[in-house]
Length: 192
Ligand code: SME
Image (cartoon, rainbow, N blue to C red):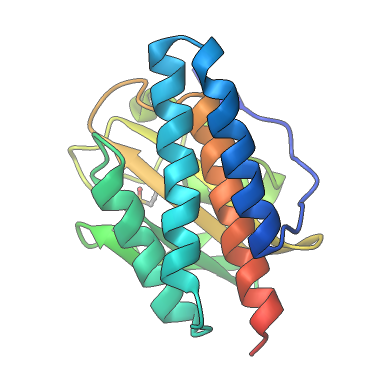
């Protein structure tokens, strides 16, 4: 089974806005269940940590490398976290943490290629049931792929794998989309 979240119109947040959003979120957490609280708090904290890692640096490769390391080391039960960037009609491997992975993925192929083609976040609870899934690590059982947008233009995807079946849910999709938006907005603000 596969669930796809609707393509969200990309939003561009400034550093200050993103921090404000995190504080607002933290204030609302008290009314929710402990499990929901925990994930929301985790992603709110990751936004703050990502902003701190990005501050003053505009090298895309360095920032993507640190972003993937942050996700890999902060999110439980994740065995691969990283980027594929769009080059022509294919995705090419970018900075990541985890086992070596396939380098080129044509649009429309695998979870990454389908997410890139359909311009939407894809959550795959069981990768063995996803037609055309590309297995880079035999330990992976579930996956989430988040497209990265520069306005309406696709830049690439953020990909996370887990050894757990059903590891990723809508809260992960929301949290990772917010982090991806913060990341792209930072790169755009500083320019090449
Ligand atoms: N599983 C992905 C390939 C990339 S690896 O998971 C790192 C896919 O099906 O597109």
